[in-house]
Image (cartoon, rainbow, N blue to C red; front, top):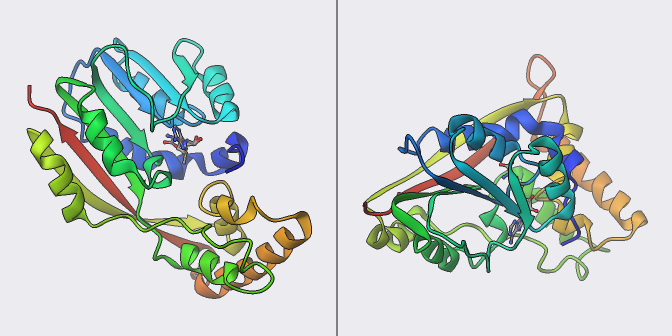
Length: 256
Ligand SMILES: C[S@@+](CC[C@H](N)C(=O)[O-])C[C@H]1O[C@@H](n2cnc3c(N)ncnc32)[C@H](O)[C@@H]1O
């Protein structure tokens, strides 16, 4: 995938940061020493960690140079670097490994989760949130538009795989956890109009569909996709549209 755009991502910062807050609220640790934010993006999730645990040694990493540049500018006192979640390993055991809205992009994430559990200090926590929205109209309509000519061939394989069921994550992590908490939250974000939904997904889920296209094809794709979104998300009485957004949360605590 082409590099992420931090400024496009931050257009909906409040809404995107809310699940990070909800995830953080369920981590039962008062004074962790070392905290790592995987896929820290522009530092919005890292800032929450630093506010909750000002005494902790907090770092973040991401594969995107644009995101890391923004995170460093936002939080100059913290340590940020370029690294890949699939291969990263810490120098010392970590008390909190936090990953908000990252692992949905890595189909091999179950194996990575098991590996990350092994990097935790005794009593440490792996905390993960992933969008579970692949069946929502916002994402179904990406696939339906991609299946039309002239995109069919070029966009084969652009769609993200659905997440496995909760039972899969439970069986994966319960043998490694003293406490395991898995839940879903469905957010309903009021947005200005259908174009705002398109703008929201442009920074994330729509990227694999737009990145392979040239300018003309991209405009055509966006025109058809936006029309389909407008039909699927009719305006509320106040003229806004509601973006329904299910997300999956996992908090796994290693035995102390
Ligand atoms: C949706 S953003 C999440 C940003 C932030 N954590 C938040 O809570 O809003 C996803 C981030 O994951 C990063 N990312 C994607 N694949 C990654 C990988 N394999 N390793 C590390 N970061 C990755 C992207 O560059 C992007 O900044």
